[in-house]
Length: 203
Image (tube, rainbow, N blue to C red; front, side, top):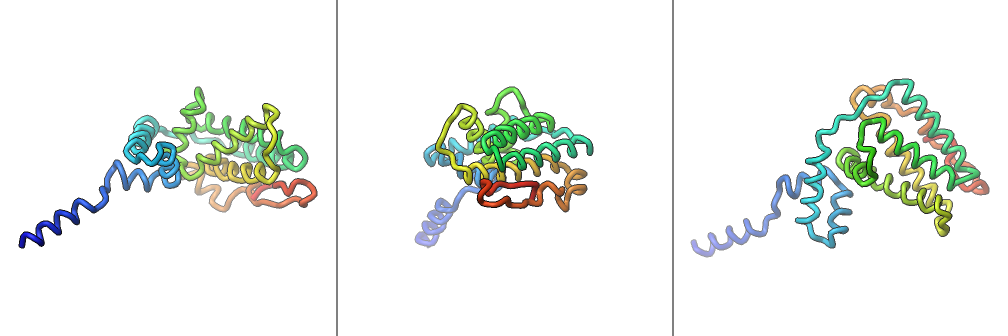
C-alpha cells in the first residue's frame, strides 16, 4: 500500500502544470511563446510573467473598424509597394514598413512606441508579429545604407509582412466575412528571376 501511495505522489509531481501560467499562454501565443522563452534563456517562469503582463496591458484592446473606403485605399497602396519591389526592393521594404505601421495605428493599436506596438500585436496576432519585427528591422537596415541583405530575404520579409497586413485589414467579424475569399491584391504573381523574383500584384 505504501508503495502505491509513493508511486501516485511521484506521478503527480511529474505531471506538467496546466493553467494560465503555462498551457493557456503557450496555446495563445504559439511561436511567440517559444521565442520569449528563448529570449529569457529558457527561463519559462520569466517568459510567462512577461507574456501575462502583455495580456494584462493589451488584452482588452478593441480594434477600430475600417471603412470600405479605407480598406480599398490600403489595398491599393500595398499593391503599389509590391510592384515597386521589382525595381527597388529596399525602397519598397521601407514603404511596406511605413504602411504597416500606419495600419497598426489606424486600427487602434498603440502608436507612441514601437515596443508597445509589438507587445500589443503579439497578444492579438501572435503568429504574425515576428513578421512585423523582421520587416521593420530590414527596412531600418536598408534605410541606414546597410548592406548584406539579399533580395530574396527582402522578398520573404515582404511576403510575411503581407500576411500580417491582410490579417489586420480583415480583423473583426464583419471585415473577415466580407473578405473571406481574399482581395485581389493578395493573389501573388511572381515576376521573372531577372527582375529580383519579386511579388507583383498580390496573392
